[in-house]
Length: 499
Image 1 (cartoon, helix red, strand yellow):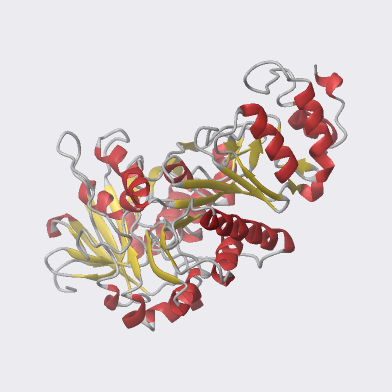
Image 2: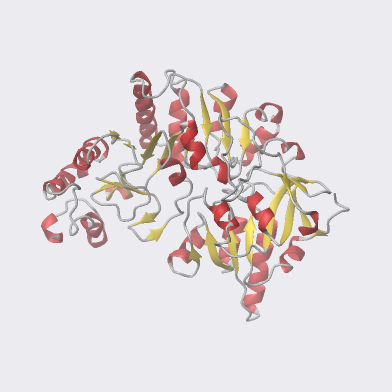
């Protein structure tokens, strides 16, 4: 292979990329993200800016990335446009200040939107690989994301061949891309472990402009340890699923799980794994974190389909050191398949995601603080929520030391409507919204999920909105947010002040 394609330094590869071009990068979370070339591209941008010349690029990825990609390019003010999801603090500030145009979208839709041409041309694909063949076969590393789509669409390709990830990852990926309408057929995933595609990405070798040799770990930071609040949320969720099984609403063999990213997700999975009343389960999800690996080894999780292995370097070394075992337990798919509504609906997936705030109607805000400040993006939560067998959102009942209630009269931004959200979970309890009218939902959410400090003032809001199908007041719906902006605390509101 090394005699087939030009071997470049990261700096030489970056020199090939020009101002105002669009790049499709590998990566779904920092797992599998390109690292050396974007870092070199950031240095090039700084040189160009110092010389008085413009240099910015459009950045497409699978989801968030690491410090060497989003972080470095944002620090260099080298990003003009970004989609579909991010989690870098510098980039977040640039998005919220209007310096970077950001389009938030459902992750399952990104690959087809790119193929349809809605995002314009993709000039470069910059991807990380564990191996390359002379014929253009690429073995990806720790994620798939939208990499296969970018490889197909891009005019030219640059590859980071990362020796940190062994070529023996071959067989851990299942690369499948559906045809576009009107030729699209069903996606033939009928069981979590079904393989439907190729273990490698195939590209025209003439498109490969160069290979950069690297030896870099994924930049996946460990999550904070669990807290009493997140542990209680986990226990509440486990107890709910046990009750659903006893009621016959979840079959005795259980159903595949999807879990979001973060400390609450880890706590929930830990509680499910520890419960003796929940049978061994499968996961059909978009991200696997460290907490899933021991569940796979113990047999509590019998198989996991994902788009990324978002593991700490230590856990990733453990997995790659035991590939003979994990090759039969894990499958990485493109995000278009891991998050596809058709498969979510067919398999009967139970989805569990996190919220910033939940309103009394059951609407969920998962992206914007105080309605306008973007955090990260909607990610894949909507892909699963709208099609799940059971859809659940969880969050602590308060934030900022109790000064903010996660349960509010009206969500300041809505990502998931009352028509999709079935279950709300906090450390206070569970609100089962299925089959309930708007006023019943409101009472359940207050009684079961709101913090005691906020329950009475939320009930006062309901008393002021008794008429109408929805418990809604246009003048008072955002009063608790306004209370926080004025006084730094949502508690002790005087509703008359905001009429």
